[in-house]
Image 1 (tube, helix red, strand yellow):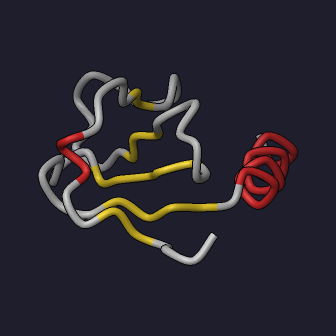
Image 2: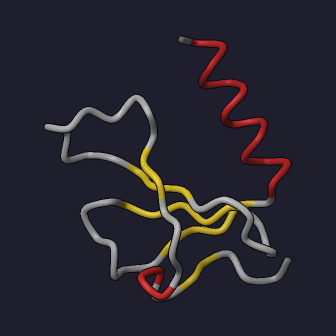
Length: 70
């Protein structure tokens, strides 16, 4: 994987927020499953902005670490 960002993430569909995000919360990230190049992650407050693109293995490690803290 050579690119680490998607300049305009709004062109992709299927974004989802974390189940831990409350309805009132304005500080959320959204992720997109099943992207062929990795896991795109964007700021929900800026849906037309860029998304960071993480390798699937790195994202899985991150999620596992977050769950271990919970």
